[in-house]
Amino acid sequence: MTLHQPVDFSVITEAADPHAMRLTLRGVLDYESGDEFLRFVGAALDAHTQRHGPVLRELHLNCAGLILLDSSGLAALLTLRRRTHPAGVTLRLRHEPLQLVRMLALTGTADYLTARADGTAGSVAPGGELTDEAGSTSS
Image (cartoon, rainbow, N blue to C red; front, side, top):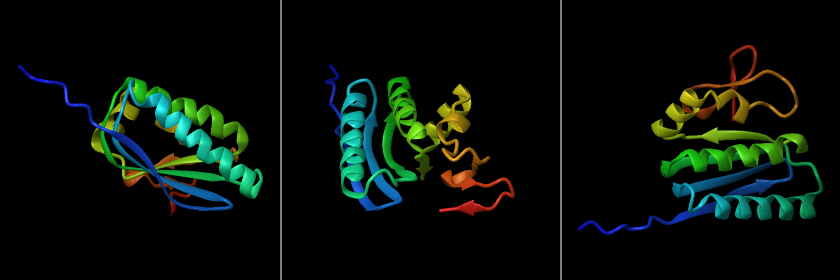
């Protein structure tokens, strides 16, 4: 008999300045952890706004520690994007595991999820770097 061993999920604030926040995701982002993810990131965004005002422009998500992301995890990322984009905050995915890259490609959500909030063109390059129209990467 195989017992289900739950895998913890965590979000760690790496760094924040007035215009950028960097978070590290670890574990499994799925049906069970999606709401927790959204609550934590929402609270971090609210605290940032209280401290600095509405000047945040980039939210970097370091995904290297993600073990698994299912469709509910993708839904959580899309929900986050629906909050950040109207506020002028661009999501930047970093160090995505191959599973996430494939899911974004399969669902056609990569461009939507990482579209620049300022309306300029950009796309995801290998390694999660956003590129501008000229093809140069920014960090």
